[in-house]
Image (tube, rainbow, N blue to C red; front, side):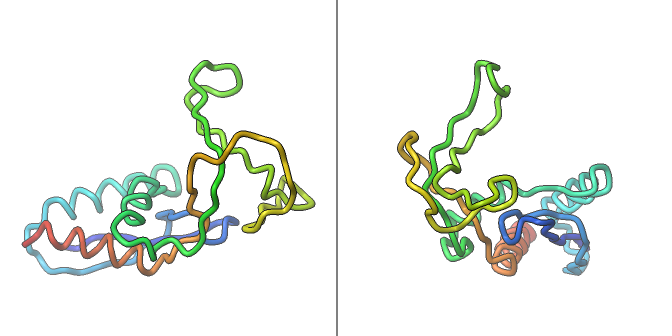
Length: 145
């Protein structure tokens, strides 16, 4: 089986796990259909949309190995379900972490005292990309055994 995986971060430091550039992982023709399907889905999304974000896999990797997240912040997050401001989107209260230029600057340390709702979520801010890919490949290899 040959699986195509890769990652590239665009203007977000280590905050996103994105599939954009491909790294070929040759595991031989072992009939690992799960890994083949994953590789095909990720490759398709990367070709169609220019990238494929791995949000769910990033979260699961954090549960498996907490060291995969190098930095996290406690923030308040709501999911807006009424369609008043967004529809079904995650809304993060970043006010405590905004730097001098809120459009561009999101600090990893508290910047200001801002009133807002109590933090209810620990959000990953930096990933160990190499460890993430090790976990993903190790997991997919298990399906071929």
